[in-house]
Image 1 (tube, rainbow, N blue to C red):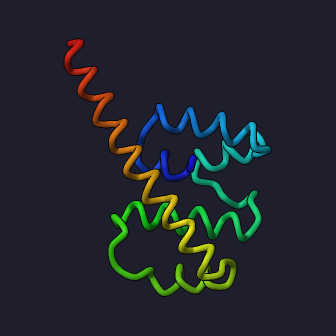
Image 2 (image 1 turned 90 degrees about the vertical axis):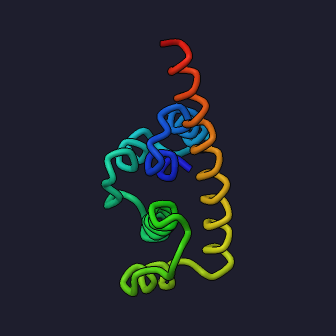
Length: 111
């Protein structure tokens, strides 16, 4: 969720999801790494999940994965997990874009 919010540049959502991640046991170091795009400190499954989710968001959930990325995720994640990640990323994407639009609208009205 944090990586998807970061990809969508939704600062408010990123703050909320970061707090949730911390309360779920994600370390400050891991969160900082995700925010910086440095996933080397994460296990292979977590890296694959984050890369997959961000790629789906950045490509607006269209088209197949790049062959190299497809290979990485298929080695680490089963189809059910990929479908679950895709579903969560879609909901997150919608929510981030909605919150971002509302934030811009409220900001514009204040000006």
